[in-house]
Length: 408
Ligand code: ZN
Ligand code: ZN
Image 1 (cartoon, protein in one colour):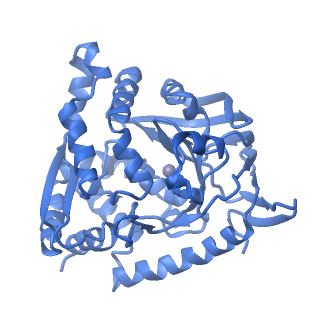
Image 2: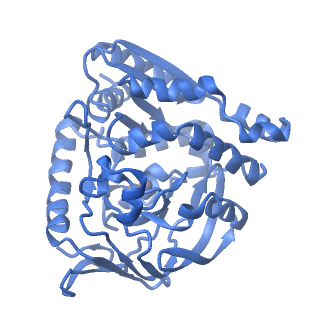
Image 3: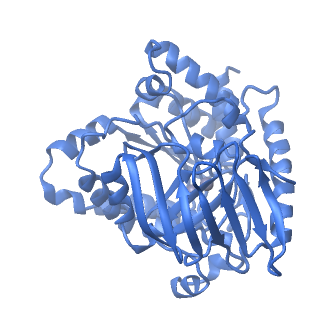
């Protein structure tokens, strides 16, 4: 079996954990068609009922952003709404190949992008709720494209850059190991030890500090749960891995409990636009001030999505000394960069991160301090000198991170 087949096998058998007679929806950029077809065949070998291919063409999306009349950017077609909500409701699994060109949308009006993304998120609220509550199985992974690879490896011929990016991805997802499936089991066992420590301590807050200027205390709600690696599908009771790779352990903050300053440690590629050298100041959970060296307009659009977009919805810990971080590559792709660094997300929190959260309605979640928003965007804060201290319910201080790595 070649490495591409091994990778497809890992995504279908471990990432999606495809069940016999299940339908799989594969969303793939047209540039990744070769790999998408390999994954399609692997899904049929694994017993798929039907593999539905959804092709994405971001260059054509750019033509729409540039040339279409303004009115269409607040619309999302009902057939597309039915496609996602319907397949999710009927128990289909979703494999998404994420491989955008980090700079393609840089000259597009960010308002058009955020309006369309808002219309989409409103139409697909049910779909997102199912996915964020482990009531629908999904996996996001990446495949190199020439545009993405040459951004990651500038000055290298496209074919060579694509090969180098394949190598980096295979390392990150452990397809370079003799037995990638066993390597994932070992990785999960290591994450489980971190989870046991964090869940055992049930910290009421975490305090962050580093030399870049991050100085923040973030409160965690009572009953918060740390997760990492696989999630358990509620209906089927089996484990799937929503992100490949994944190195993080994560939970939710209290929506009104973050105070201080966060300085991002990596650029953020948002909707095809790069935001660089940015920071936030938060009071009682709300972003009250912010700035960016580049992409400030895009950052403002993101924060203006709704009130929840100005609050934190995820707290994630990744050691500075970890496989993806050690590759020393800036991927310009959140799936990889978030797994190289401690991060937060602006926007919606995962209800699974609160004990009993998936059975609570919107009002109960809000009362428990769970943030809600149409958006969820990760941004990185990790650094070699990051210190994180856990504050126990009794006020006791416990080192969680020292010098950028787990202190336990
Ligand atoms: Zn995360
Ligand atoms: Zn996230």
